[in-house]
Length: 437
Ligand SMILES: [Zn+2]
Ligand SMILES: [Zn+2]
Image (cartoon, rainbow, N blue to C red; front, side, top):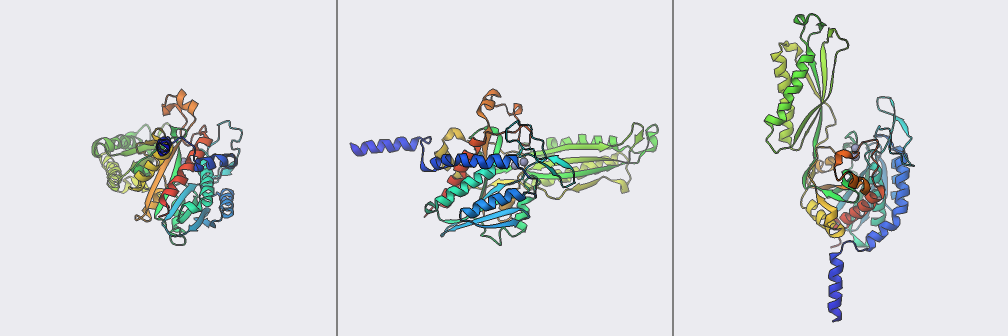
């Protein structure tokens, strides 16, 4: 009878993920401190590759916890290593940079920081992408894993990465020897806060999760002249307008239906005055895809359409459009199996199925992709942690077009929910990957 009672009690416990356990209790107890970290980080954002004070704070905390810490990796990056017996090597990543955005959240700890952009212009700076929540959870996760060393075995490499917003920080750390000077990871895991999920809900996508991001500059050259005598000119504005229209057929007519692709002309600049036909028009495009094949189709198509329209407009061979692919392309982020499935099921067991959702892939970009591409033997996963405050989510009835997006000056996530959920999730993922045999 007694053992039967125990059995049913155990069954109840197992079926009820909401019940407290030592990990969630420890994270909860640490939340006042993690929120102090969050408010400080939020009030003091730094731009890409200028995360000097931010990285110093994270490095000092990791050192205090017993990690072997190296700073200045990829300019301002931090690598904190904790060796704890035999087993795989796991990389956990936070990013650190803020954005040139004037904060308008009205939070009592809103950023008043101003800084110089790389072009030398003064700009307000804000953690408008939530990297401050990532860093606070990174601290929380480092604390938990340092305190729970008896429950895992292997090597933990916790990194704080610069310059995610300009797509260069991960590459800078890898180029600076992340995989040669430090233990090379078998697994890499990160999370990002999400403006399209309610606070505390985890989203994941197996396979392609985020897109290839290419920035293309297209200079359309004509022959300038007087606006009253178009017969003596080749008008680059009319030609560029035709190119913009023709580009719309790439996705609608050339990409296989169902395959993801975006071609957006985000900037069209030409001319200075009513009655002058300018010499050239300048277009700036963002081009998004998942697979290398679709990426090639889009980039080749842009070149073909630009040239073809220029020929149709009678532009001479030496004035054909000039196409420049900007450096720093962000490759698509791929969440590997079986890691993604395994972690998703562990999360579901811990948080319950209402809080763990299989979400569609997005066309945004993330340079977390570089950690997998630098070593395809490794497994990688980036997951989402919803940040939309519950009252705002309910008021918008889940219509995210009514809510501030990431990078908005109004983006104010429910930070306690994001940080607590992410810390518990990252620690759980680490304990799963580095489980004692
Ligand atoms: Zn961002
Ligand atoms: Zn971000």
